[in-house]
Each structure stands twice: as C-alpha cells, then as structure tokens.
Length: 238
Ligand code: ATP
Ligand code: MG
Image (cartoon, rainbow, N blue to C red):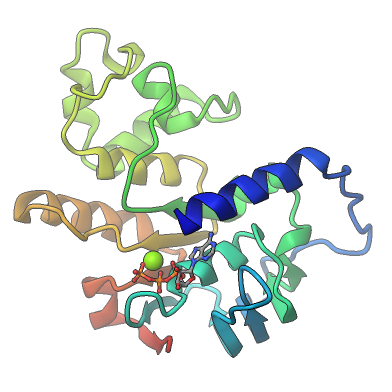
C-alpha cells in the first residue's frame, strides 16, 4: 500500500512535469572507466525517512558486482536511482559521468538493461515482448536475443513463431524472455534485481546460463545473485 501511494504521487508528478531541457554540455562517455558512481548519496522516498545515508560506491566499466543486504536495506532503491527515476536529496548519482536524471529517456534503453523478478507483458506478439515496439531492434536482433537466452527453439515451435500473440499461458519461462528483452537493445549496463529468486531448479539453471552469455563484455550490477557473487566484487548495503 505504501509503495502504491508513492506510485500514485509519482504519476501525478509526471502529469504536471514540464519538459526537461537537456543540459548541452552533458554527454555521457562510455570510454570513461567509471560506469556508475554514487557520491555521498542520501535518499528517502519522503523527507521523514532516510533509506540511504551517505552511500558512496563506484562501479568500473566491465565490472560484475553484487549488492548484498537485508530486505529493505535499499538495494532496489539504488537501482531506481541509477535508472534516474529518483533524484537523491544529497550527493550525486552519475552514469558515465552524467547525473542519471539527466540521461534522456530515449538513450536509457541503450545504457541500461533492467531485469526484475516479475515480467511485465505488453500487448502484442512475442517479438513485441522483446523489442517493446522499438523499430530500431531488427528481426535479426530479436532472434539473436532469443538464441542467447535459449528461447529460440521454444519460440520457433509456436504457431506463428515470433509473431504469435503473447498470452499468459504461452510460456513458463518468463524470466528468460525478460533477459531477452534486456539483451535485445545491447545495453552497456545490466541491472539484475534478484532474478533467480523463487525459480525451480531447472529454470534457475537456464536463467543462470542465459545470464552468463548476456553478461559477457558488459558491466553487470546484480542484487543477491549467487553466481555473480562467486566471481565478482560484493558490495554490502546496510
Ligand atoms: P528487498 O531485499 O526486500 O528487495 P531492498 O533492499 O531492495 O529490499 P528497497 O526496495 O530498496 O529494499 O526498499 C528500501 C526501503 O524503502 C524499504 O523500507 C521500503 O519499504 C521503502 N520503499 C521502497 N519503495 C518505496 C516507495 N516507492 N515509496 C516509499 N517507500 C519505499
Ligand atoms: Mg529489492
């Protein structure tokens, strides 16, 4: 309920928002070696409650890190700040040296691939689930993303393959489709929010395999993700 109220407030803010002017001097630079940079960030969804208190962390280009912390510690909140959905009360959140809130929405899909626990279906075909109606993502890209995540065979066995209208009972492995959706735009930074929680062993294995392929040559920030925890740096969030 708390989160729904905050959502309604956010929607209202959105409706009264004026179009943001893009500061001309700010262009993100992926040659820059720091992908994400939180500098002394203090944040709360409202003034009465501080969720993150003076948090600083840096994630380098190509690094694979895991944010680890108890429930409610603010891990998903850090993702929302990185995505530029919220602005910190104090400090700065930089993506490739640019404040995340200043990244134009049109660029965000190139910068971030965001995978969360639940899959949000959009009306349309299986292909639409992967492209999110982005015409710049070609059929070849869609196929590549499906192959990368191990979904290609399942999709090709559907009556109209990629053009099959998507319904709730079409698949069981939504998490893989979610990863394909994130991978299709070839994002620079992958954000994975507890995506292997609540999966059966077989699906979890498929998801981990898919992730391994998708994570190659990318900056990956995951929340409580076991395989990543074994290979990369672990950042405690308290
Ligand atoms: P979990 O491991 O359970 O996913 P988390 O570390 O991801 O936890 P967050 O989702 O970042 O935690 O939440 C941090 C705190 O902020 C919690 O106390 C939560 O209730 C609160 N919170 C999260 N989203 C909102 C919101 N939209 N509005 C107000 N409070 C929120
Ligand atoms: Mg969370």
